[in-house]
Structures are given as structure tokens and as C-alpha cells.
Image (tube, rainbow, N blue to C red; front, side, top):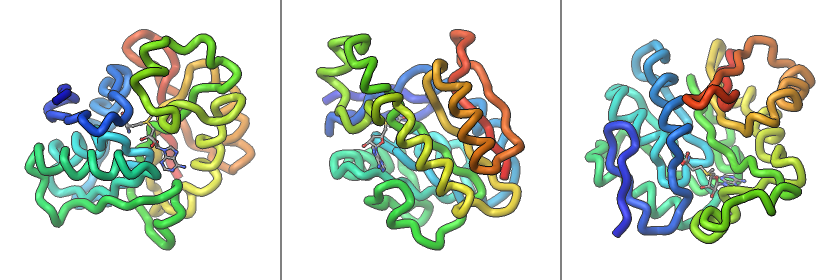
Length: 207
Ligand SMILES: C[S@@+](CC[C@H](N)C(=O)[O-])C[C@H]1O[C@@H](n2cnc3c(N)ncnc32)[C@H](O)[C@@H]1O
């Protein structure tokens, strides 16, 4: 059975979901450190193995997390990982949802997202190992890799409390187009950030 470490959590991958990347581990640690407040309501959308939300629950003990993913394997995997990391049952929910579809009326203090963001037109550049091991549904997002990010930014503002935060990951090549989408959608308080390899990889947005 395959298991990896993600921050201070043990993450099972036996359901063949997306394998967490070191870049994600890097920014999630930083984001968890800067979130302030008590009893925060947090959404981990595009949750996959659940590594992001599990790390939040292990490190912000009074927070509550909704995990959302469209893939049944991911939902089963999140359940395994929540139990493996001894997360109290009352602190999380696992929701099968196409983005916010089944989260109608829900508002969060913080939304974390690591969406599929590989451009279909760059498929030949993707390592054979990745294509064989990670599910396609976790990787690709239309011709430019931006379909999920575009939808996320259109809808997320309706699911944030005032002053709420969004953190999400992207491909460094997408930075300028993401800036255009943010402006079009009326977000004016955001900061692009680099990963441990000095590439723009994640963003913090304040509503
Ligand atoms: C890149 S993986 C991220 C997994 C995990 N959060 C991580 O950082 O390792 C993207 C995840 O998004 C899910 N996904 C793809 N399309 C979706 C959609 N429309 N709504 C919700 N989840 C979706 C996939 O099943 C996959 O688990």
C-alpha cells in the first residue's frame, strides 16, 4: 500500500488519486501559518487525497473543513486519510461536488484549491510517469489549462465571508492570464507568490 508524508500527516494513496507534489506542500505550509482567526470554516476544493485539508485540520485544531471532489476514488481516499490522521468526525465533511455545485449557500473563511491546470495543448510535454500514474481528471483543464481556474474565480466570491481568503495553485506560465481573469471578475486584492524553485506557483486573494 502506497503512503507518503505531507507536512506532519500520513497520506494513503491506495485509491490511485493524484500524488501530492512538493510545491503544494511548500505553499500549504506557508498559507496555514499566515491564516489568523479561531473556528475557521475552510473549503478544500479539488481535494484529491485530502492532503491539503488534512494538513489544515492537524495544524489548526479548531478549524472545520469541507472536502469537495468530483471523483469517487478521491472521496473514498479522503475518508481513509481523515481516519488515518485521527481527525475527529465532527470537524469535517466530504462532499461529492463538481466545483461548488453541491455547496449551494455555503460560505467559507478560507478556500484552498489545487485545481487541474495542465494545458491540453501541452500534453506531449507531460512526463510519461505522470500520465500513467495520476488520473487525467486531476491533470487537464481545457486547451490552456485554465477552465477550472476560470470557473473557480467566477464562483468563489459567492462562497466567501467578507474579508475571506482564497489560496490556489497554478502553472507559472498562466500568471498573466490569471491576472486578467481576476481583474475581469472584480478581485482587486491579490498577491502572486513563488514556490521553493523560485517560480510563480500560488496566489493569495482577499475578498
Ligand atoms: C491536481 S489534483 C489536486 C489533489 C490534491 N488537492 C493535491 O493537492 O494533491 C485535482 C483534483 O481535482 C478533482 N477535480 C477535477 N475536476 C473537478 C471538478 N469539476 N470539481 C471538483 N473536483 C474536480 C480531481 O478529481 C482531483 O482530485
